[in-house]
Length: 182
Image (cartoon, rainbow, N blue to C red):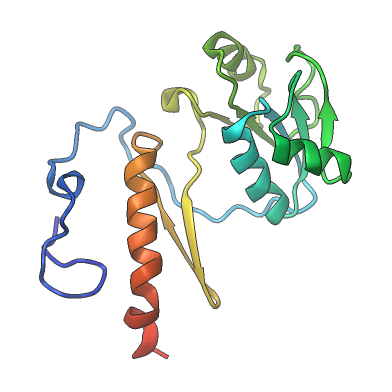
């Protein structure tokens, strides 16, 4: 890793997480980075908690038609359901709930349910098991937008806390970093 930080200086980053040697990658080769258009596409999120809320928020911002399958919803998701922004199926997950979905996200606190979601997915459905990156076709990334630029940060699903820290540092550094580029 270079000794240059996101501000362009030659100071090393302070966090031990940045200094640590990378772990052997169980998911080699690296994922293919893309920006996926999901406007108008059906997305099914199985789970109704805090993680589901984050996933649904980003799917809605991207224009997806979101269905949430969960017996209960986080307060923010319940508000989205009340407003008609999402279709809430108030029930436990069952085979058939993924029909017609392009994107499937399993984010319950029950790994058996998450594994069933992955197993039930049809060919062509992009699946993310938030509890097990090895069962995922894709990993969600942290996003920093600045004008027409989009910057993403990913740990291939391994270290979300590190991703949040790097995202914040990037967001803080971008105005100065890009001031000379415009």
